[in-house]
Image: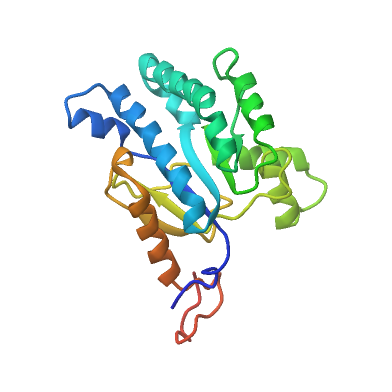
Length: 242
């Protein structure tokens, strides 16, 4: 049974896992894997729109990643800064609107300003909504939304979702397909609210080896699935959950 969204634009979220293992298996420092992973980001962003994806959210750096060695954290932040400086024109030419979700107050000096510059420069692009999660925790986002709402009234799902999404978004978009590379099978505190009914795809391919064909295969599998959203699927009268 094909997905009911086969002819509609999709929100795909990706946990980009496996950079370090990719490098280690080649006798390289982990930072080499992160650099190669940036090239994968470019390939996937360029392929997304052609494959029917209208929103792409990439998990680049979690709030728990601050626990990694300082050298690796500095390298990751340096790669992010380099990406913003070198890819801004490419994003705009490709019609990609960049939004960064997550905290910005703990980022290295000046990085938040550079993020804001690219966000503003690409604000009118409409081909792809590219969201990059940096210093991001889904549980923190939900807790912040709850605090912003207050305790006076029970919020509707729609109203609460607007508080979770980044400023300027009409609402927090639900994820249709969540992909994790690298062979691990967990969500790691990523888009827990938005992925409540997402289809999950866990693949062994390490992120630096992921490409257009892998994304196309994941989307093809997604479109073969039946999405019931808690209702009954055709030909499955006993279905009650999922």
